[in-house]
Image 1 (spheres, rainbow, N blue to C red):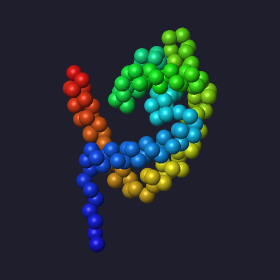
Image 2 (image 1 turned 135 degrees about the vertical axis):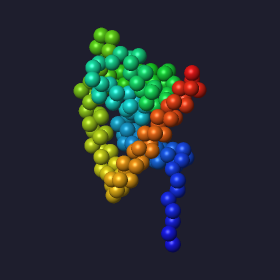
Image 3 (image 1 turned 180 degrees about the vertical axis):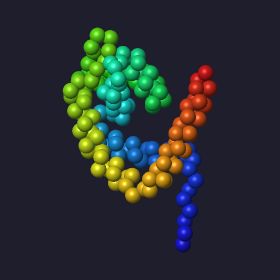
Amino acid sequence: MTTTAPAADSRLLGLAHYAARGVLEHVLARHGVTFPQQIALRAAVTADAPRTPDELVAQVRATLKADPADVRAALDALRAKELLVADGPHLVPTEAGRALLTAVAAEVAPLTARVWGGIPAEDLAAAGRVLALVTERADRELAALEG
């Protein structure tokens, strides 16, 4: 019996996202941080230059499509945990913040390898193109709705 793969749609994309996010959130919980906090911390760590709180809020909001108040709460929590600190007008990651991301990446790597392993490169490339296009279109629709 041959089965056909389901066509990609919003539901399937959401299921894949939440399944993968669930794996990551399980690891993050062991470190006492949430998914939005991890996204905000990563934004600060990977920034080319130090970011102000407003710049981080804008970046994380664009990534998560989250309420700015929720993003500010995530930044406040990272400061309370001393994973981010104020440096003049900027928020910068501490060594503890960098170490946390390194530890999470190390824990998630084998899980990610099992999730993504064995998928042919051409399938990943096709999926990447489709997901990039869906993201672009959805961002455009959201901008129009918020217009």
